[in-house]
Amino acid sequence: MDNRKKGIILILLSALFFASMAATVKFLDRIPVVEKIFFRNLLGLFVASYLVIKNKKPILGNNKKFLILRSIFGLLGVAAYFYALSNLPLADTVILNKMSPFFVLVLSAFFLGEKIKPFQILSLIFALIGASLVVKPEFDISVIPYIIALLSAFFAGSAYTIIRHLRHTDSSETIIFYFTFISTITMIPFMLSGQFVIPNSIEIIGLLGLGVFATTAQFLMTNAYRFAPAGELAIYTYTNIVFSTIIGIIIWSEFPGILSILGGLLIIIAGFINYYSNKKKA
Image 1 (cartoon, rainbow, N blue to C red):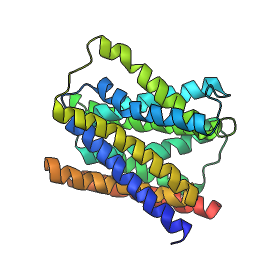
Image 2 (cartoon, one colour; image 1 turned 135 degrees about the vertical axis):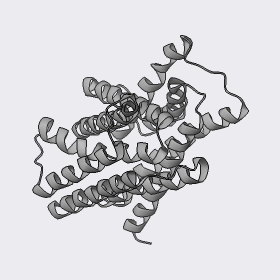
Image 3 (tube, rainbow, N blue to C red; image 1 turned 60 degrees about the vertical axis):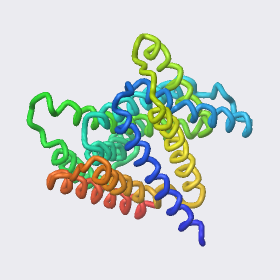
Image 4 (tube, rainbow, N blue to C red; image 1 turned 180 degrees about the vertical axis):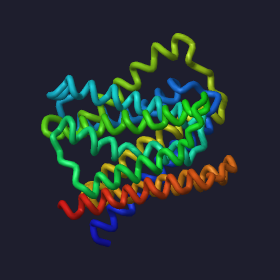
């Protein structure tokens, strides 16, 4: 098996584990968001600490200001995503969260000086139309979780944009350590103030699974990029939508409506356009 096929298999497995993580978040509906964020990052913190020590990377990093800023945006993205997962159909939340690459396009153009190609502008238009179909705005309180789902994509896109800047100064191990450390530590005061529910035996397994799914997905994705360029693998991450839709149908009988299906297809098409645009550029 050549390296490209290995990369594709790993990125597909990563998408499956990310979908499993999202389903676990939705399943743990009795557990507060801050508690889920804590357990989602706790295992990752141990793994990141081990990797920093093993690979002899500077634990405090070099560009501390942007390392902290990346962690804050990443934490806000996870918090918004977890909230949306608890209040929306699984597939709709995952579809809207997949808007993050298009926010990266815009933010990278504004803050990193990267040029947006004509085909990428077309992909942005497709993505915006797709998102509006999924949201189905009715201009009442029911639209709030959809807005928060889009915010999760914006915050994630902001974090990814900062990572593009940090790649010149800091290692991936240090970046992940900062994110998991800040995300874990900042949840403790909220849990002590009352945002903590003593889990039952099934919920304990779910919380542990949450950390395992998230950490495994991140590990698989990181290793996938060792075998093939990120630009070649990015399009396969959209299978997360397919996996999440199947899980939503099986577990919660969440059959997506026609507008959600059309919106999801448009966002996937936008991803294809952006993918081929980057491939042509490469």
